[in-house]
Image 1 (tube, helix red, strand yellow):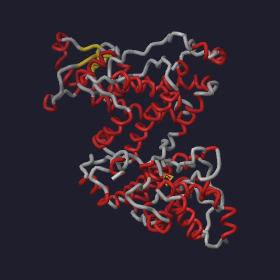
Image 2 (cartoon, rainbow, N blue to C red; image 1 turned 60 degrees about the vertical axis):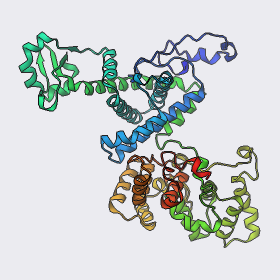
Image 3 (cartoon, protein in one colour; image 1 turned 90 degrees about the vertical axis):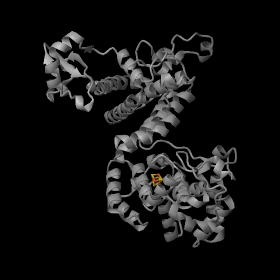
Image 4 (cartoon, helix red, strand yellow; image 1 turned 180 degrees about the horizontal axis):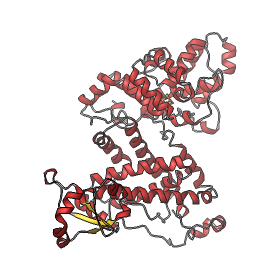
Length: 511
Ligand code: SF4
């Protein structure tokens, strides 16, 4: 990963531009990976070894997934305990970090992925003050979560390795100052406080000084050991803040790298809503056969973007091009065959004659399914259904168009009316949606509506399938919304445990 290091001596953009990649194949790597002694990392040293572009992007996307789930927890006002429970499977899946005690053979690979993905996102989010702030906040939360879950002895070793400028108060000094130390730091045996203090320069703990929670003596602040974790977290944030400022200054150099710049740009866009690829498991598969005549009935499971298109279609017996494309791909994604899809559109465009329909509309439907056309259709599979990220970052629809995501494109008043029209009447939910939308957290608003609409089923699913109390990660794809809604409303049709972080299992789908 030489291309993403941050010291000027390592990056010579002009030189890099004339390097012949063929001559590099026999070159010895100048950089070596650290040995990752600890599970936790302060990310003070950038990684320097080469990695493939695929790993560069994949690892960053995995980390982004973790950060966005963490952010979703705070938008949903989850308590620290709920957040930690919710994040456990998410972290296991995307960014697992085992302890030294685990003796896992994967330790080094896990820590390397963690290290590289942090630095990739650091570059991706260094561009604006808002992104830097958001990234630093989430990274600090992640660090805190991991710090709290670390084994005590491993935590102690890690903190010791940080070489922070604090000194434990020795037995003699402690004995002399014990009374003052206890009084100044609110030491209390009854809450299990450990009888241990350390001393630091008083300027490094301004908060504790102003709250009178330390003993001050000859320029030193005597701090109780219980404050150590908070101090480590604060040091982490300070170090990351200054690292992000530094990265921002180096960003223009990255623009010269035409391999990394598009990836970094794409990653920074992903903070709107993380990318989620369409998965075949989001179709109904063998759970139910979908025909053209079922779409009206099934539309109650659709997310707002698709319900909106369906309503417009029924109202006007017509949809403009982008709306048609968005809806066709979605219907294809839920499992509607090409023949059924053609039938669906033919009936829906009832004011249009056969000739006109065949000459102006049929081709596009077949093209979306990969039945005709070249380019993306080369393998005959056609286009994949659009993700929330795509719908949330494309140009806004113009007059008479209905495509995109209504949480983003509708005015707050029109959005409230649309939600009420599809049966979302709970004031608290509507208020939450307004707030999410005001903060441009569109996919969070959508998840809020989903959770409210499926409250009873979600509880039942969790109870019956022994899922952890909050095991449904954030929905990031309209087809994922549909599948999850359908499965929850038809719980009897699926096996216990079939709905989890990944949606219904492949095993269930094939039965
Ligand atoms: Fe559709 Fe995604 Fe918007 Fe929800 S957040 S309405 S699923 S685009």
